[in-house]
Image 1: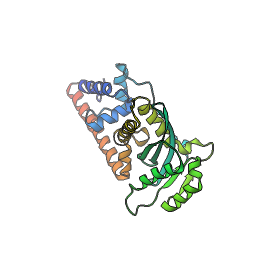
Image 2: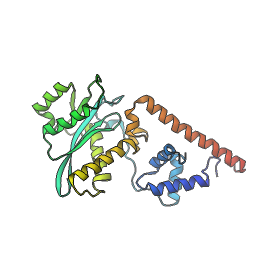
Image 3: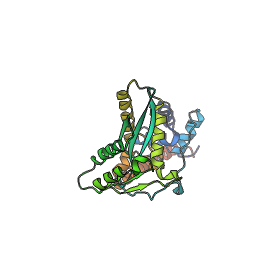
Image 4: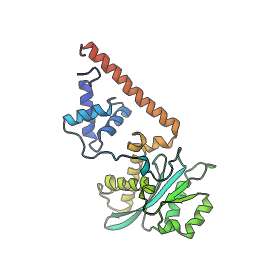
Length: 266
């Protein structure tokens, strides 16, 4: 047994936390635990513990490589906004989820479940997202696909009026809209298909609650296992959060070494 091997109480804490959060993989569990002050156990050790008790999940996080990212990546919040429409089959009726996602933080800035998907619906959702920006802030670049709503003359007038630039995904290049497509896939698999809705209004409440969880609680593998809300606060906040995490792991390692040294375990 190595000097930094986990202690019995840490093992118990990992197992208990994993049983309460079965939807999380070992990496997300490790970072969620250290953020919550439960235990500062590194992801590889969490994996060993969970594998030993048969609690390893089936799914792996998708790898993200540079050639799959499409557009040049933003360096701060609100430089690029992605927007798209997803079809939702709820209550035996087809609705349309229109979302606006910040390209830097992956935060969902605004979303609505609409009964139509006309250009005016898209404009309304985008305008409500723009209304959340502080006065005087630069307008974001809007990134969309080539759907009829986004290439219409009406939408071009909207862009000129709001002062937003516009980039469209290249044909046969789905990576250009990969961030928002991933979001729509996530909300469908983790929310829409799991939670029963009794009416359109109830469905809207369920989705709004999930969006809040996604932005503020759910750790994102592409964001160093921080939340979109963390990244929305900018680079300085991100650096501080990551440093706090690294310090917590390092302190736990030192305590572990001291514990096993005192116990006479080499």
